[in-house]
Length: 126
Image (cartoon, rainbow, N blue to C red; front, side, top):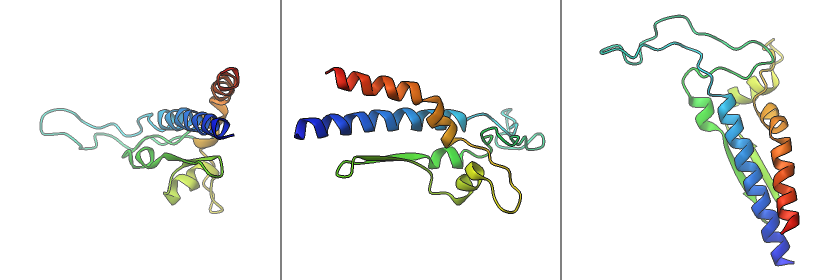
């Protein structure tokens, strides 16, 4: 029984890592052009480029991407992936005030569905 639980924890951890990685990739599309010339580092050179509804949010500062993490509860056999930032939840789901959803977490999970299934089949085979 302990062997099976260990294998399940392994699977959950590998699956969480894959979804976490994809979510961070989706949140890595640059939004604001930044000058990189001498003496210009960090200075905005043009307006902010925002994502359209339905697209993942564009990276402005990197704060949202950096906040994405995962955890595996070995006792309950649950993996959680997400961000503690309220703005990331608002971007994912939209708001009552009119911000349309810009899904990044659900999209990452959907896009990694086949990879997660493949991981599960590998664990079953061993």
